[in-house]
Length: 390
Ligand code: PMP
Image (cartoon, rainbow, N blue to C red; front, top):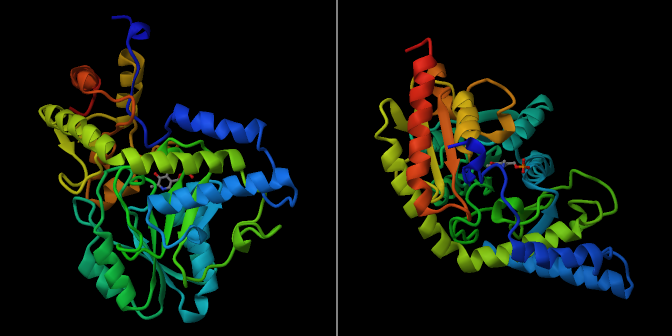
């Protein structure tokens, strides 16, 4: 079949998601009608302020925060992680200068920590096992009384592994530390209760729950002190200055409301498609699942194939089958270095190069599974025929 005639099968929801049409309609109102500045004291500003606070309440409800007051809106996930890490470490440095994160965090966690390290903080990473789970005994040994901040992601975007956050929180709190959790890969897919799970700081993004790009949020537990990292007009309790992006924030709130209502059913649906895709792809010679079999995001399937390059898989799947996948984090795929996540779970460089990540979403359909599997089988066979290393 001519590739242009093939139906598009988009399997890269971790990189970008379409905005839910219901959210787009809701948020559009704040571009053209209630477009005010929430800080203005007149009626147009008041309407904007109300929309902002409604969004705050809806996001708080999605994660079972103590109150809407705990939610600080940002421009996205990277900013939320930066605010959590720099804002917490700098504000609490009188208690200690040690900061740690898991070895498989996203660069928006690792790089702010490295920046703090240049400024005199002591930074180290917690090892993970071959399935990507943090080694809890290593964590317990590493955390000291002067470890001011620990960051462990809820689930990993490249290998889908879901961390035992409650056990991590216990280890951190036993030493009086603060736990930051990057929720980006898991939000809207798994039910999360920040209070029950002992989370102190929690980064979220709008687009990862089918909201408009350009908004994110940081949950800050009552009593946890952080400082702002972007001084200005003092919006968002002085922690994040700048006129709020009302359109994206209102959309994020609506997306959070819908996610709360629909997550359970949708995640179960995606999990069925995931399981059937994984079991069929693993029949391909020289294929391996990366990440944990059971403690895994419901929409996530990730593999390595021996003897071929992930970039070639991605381009072939797109060009010949109109199937879009990823080969590791979209954010770092500009470099051809193997993913730090795959190296941390113990893969050799040449193994890590052959990675393929599929993230399912609203357009995914059980009926597409045979087409997906055929595309992978034929792509892998074609690339292996051309490969000099087999
Ligand atoms: N954390 C995780 C786990 C991610 O996968 C990403 C990328 N989607 C980010 C943080 C950063 O997101 P963004 O580039 O949208 O700020």
